[in-house]
Length: 115
Image (cartoon, rainbow, N blue to C red):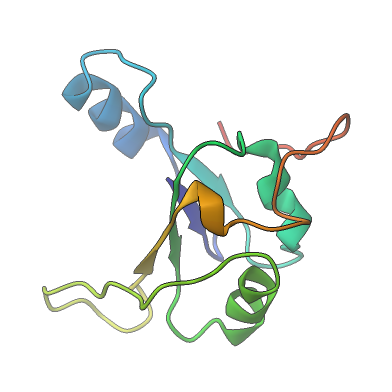
C-alpha cells in the first residue's frame, strides 16, 4: 500500500495494525510519500511483480497526472463513510502488469520512504 499525501501520514500506527492482521507476514507493506515533489519514478522502488494499492487525495490533479504517465489507473474506489473532503483519500488498485516505465524497478538509487 502506498499513501501519497501532504502532509505525509504517520505510517507507524497503521503499519503495526497491518503486521498484526497479517500475523507478521511480509505479504503486504505500507509506505507513505509526500505529494509535493512526487515523481512517477518514485514508485520504481517497489518490486515490479507486486500489485499496488495507491491512496491519493481525490483533488490532487498533479499527482494523478503523474501517476497516469506510468500506471494504468482503474476507477478510484471511494470511501463509503462520511469523511471530510480535506481528509479523504481514494484508492487505486494497480496490477503489476499495468505498471510501465518509469514506475518499474530500476537499478541503484531509490527514494527515502517514511518507515
